Length: 275
Image 1 (cartoon, rainbow, N blue to C red):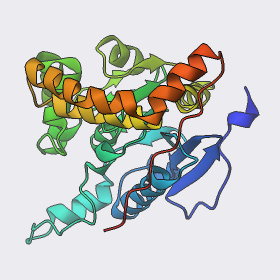
Image 2: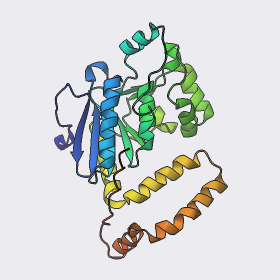
Image 3: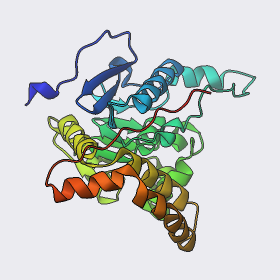
Image 4: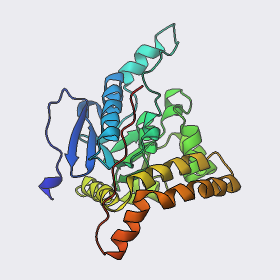
């Protein structure tokens, strides 16, 4: 095992750890004693670190994983128990919407190292790609807790693996392992446990070193919009965007670096202006 790929040890009071490897920001959900179960504190810190990575010029891609044996076991059961005992179920306003990770402009890759259940699975689906291990466990879990398909998974899952497979996972709440998840298209790559994080970081590093941040951001936006549109609309949008892409400095650099047989030197994304 390459120990250079082991996460940096930080204070256990940090619910999410941040570590930078070259142009890649690694975020590690860090409640290992609770299988990284999701709570408001973890969410706030995760979103804060995503914001920082989004606006850091030297960060070109992001990898999210979990500490210990799990990726994220879903919502913290103690929190759910408190909610179920409340009489006022009005949802308080959130600083950011739960689906905030979908709006991140930079590539976001999940290295699912263990259980991804309920909200934990949703968070993995909010990432652009998912790497995992053969023995990692995935489950929607909602129906087995008397709940509905939460946080947009009823929209995301059918578009990823098809309606019937999505209904299989949503209606049964059964647990599937990494190999089955890969076979149905739920994850994109199977890795050995000792190589999982390293392979995710290596992929993210390749994106960072060879792909235009501006182009990747625009392509993510195109794909997200195309999921709501028909083919003709997607083609028309591409034709509208093409003139600006041809005159963008990245296009010149992309062609020049190819002809000169050298790595490209693309400019970073501009930080998002504060409200």
